[in-house]
Image (tube, rainbow, N blue to C red):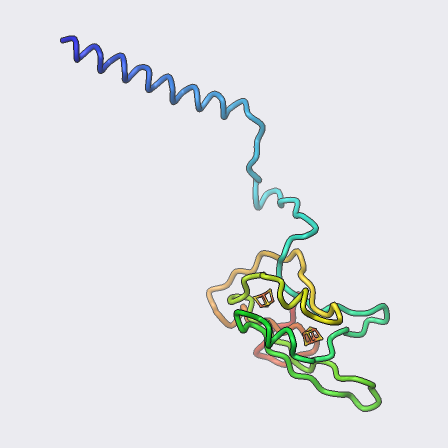
Amino acid sequence: MKAYFLDLYRGAVSLLDGMLVTLQALFSPVVTEQYPRRAAVLSPHFRGSLKLARDGQGQLLCTACGLCARSCPSTCLSVQGEKPAGAGRKFPATFVYDISRCSFCGTCVTGCPFGAVVFTPVRTRVSASRDAFLLELCPGAEEPFRPHT
Ligand code: SF4
Ligand code: SF4
């Protein structure tokens, strides 16, 4: 009989303990984001999808040197360049970025001698197809690669 009431007592204490935790959570400041109804405020240092940077005249800064592709630990970059007639340097003809393999380590961004590849805040990319994660960062690229948006 004594054990029975002891169990009842312990059960009631445990129940009150749980309710206390719930009550504390009820009156604590909200820390969760109501995504996607309200987008999270991102840090300026957030690392999202890569893009190629341009100079003040709108020219791509990339010289297609391939340094980023060689230093990427996940081998997710593939760069090929060409030198347009009259241009003093090479420009990327194709710059393929496999975002499905990217760990957002930043090696390509910090290692580029021209600051030509940068992170963007773009973080939502969903598809059932692997091909959708192969992004062509060069404008005007041919299919099957989609232009980066
Ligand atoms: S992004 Fe930078 S490191 Fe990569 S190919 Fe272009 S210039 Fe070279
Ligand atoms: S962020 Fe890292 S993993 Fe992603 S492309 Fe650049 S070097 Fe490769």
